[in-house]
Image: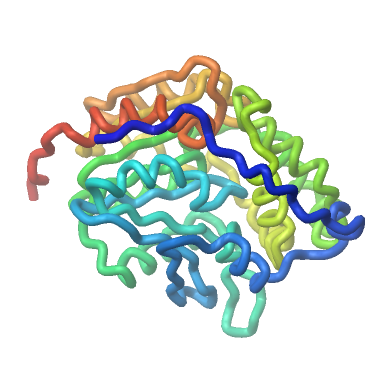
Length: 320
């Protein structure tokens, strides 16, 4: 299997300038513009719960489902997915209300609140729509929570589980997310949210912010400024109370599990890596020196070493 080049290719083409209104977040980026700019080879859409859900389905073999974290997108997996799709079928999606997908909407057009019960309904419906009966799940941050929760609820459907800086245990929300617990921010953010705040948040999730290229930074900004996304985040954040999440169920989870974590994660305490590894029977844990909250995006070549070794292990059929 070929390895990942450790030097990321960065476009030298200058990015088109954004207007002052766009940079201040006074205007939003339309869903159509996001489709035009950020769909890629293999992009598909499926209608679920009032939204056209953006996903990429590529490769052949046993199935891997990748689920990104808060305010991210399927693009965070690009380089890891390129490698894994050589030997596996890899499915990754833009969770609502993020990425190209954007918010879910009710029958009357109102934006849905994305709490854990809603994400449960969403991910179950998505996987049923694609006919996925059994897969390996790789989840980062919020996507990690969705992944392990799915494994708990559908144990026979999960072959392996990889948790990368996963959410789930009680914690103080990162300041950039916690801002949305303020009623003033929730009211004002759909009409005014300077891109400098978003850029600062993105730099904060990297262990070494110098690794972020301008194209990646622009993508995060435009997705956050996507039509309806800020309003949806304002509804979502007050529901993110991890004290209500039952992590004791992890002790009964009989799924081969790998826990990966960035040593410089500023969003979720590194101690939570040990909590997951100690609760899930037989789980293995790897801590990456110098990396932050999204190690698979920051240093995919390092993460791939551990993913390859884990995915090549033989797995026993589940006992029913």
